[in-house]
Image (cartoon, rainbow, N blue to C red):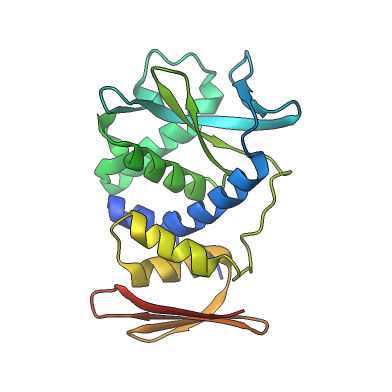
Length: 225
């Protein structure tokens, strides 16, 4: 079972596809890095947590909390980072232009912190990152995706986090929850069956059943793990 590659033409479709799996990765990342101090190396190619966890980065964009201004890295002439770490930001732009997705193709927009986290989830899922990180530099926040094989990858074939992660992402962002649940299972590589109002996921002796109304809203999530 492979990740759905049909075009996401709206902001909602992006979060339906990448939101839940991105949030699960964030939970693992936060538990791994904790409250360790961090810094970005002088070359601007890595972020280092504590003394030893070195993670290559991609810079997705910048957010200024005071003015609530978001700007993609490809459009920010003031960013002093190597071209290589801006490649994913440019790929988001190319994706947005190709599929007329306004959330990705324009240089910036007014945003709140929830929008920035949404972008982090989308970029993390789209580019298969270990997670994303908001690097607060006092007057500006950098949205980074980061990569490190030491960060545990518990996503594939694991049903255990679904009962916590999926209701949480549903509470964070508007979406068709039926479609998002199916996308989550596909991203995790978990077998499922579906009817118009029910999705059943199975792995070994574990089962999760999602019930949905005609509008795609989740009515009930039952787990036997």
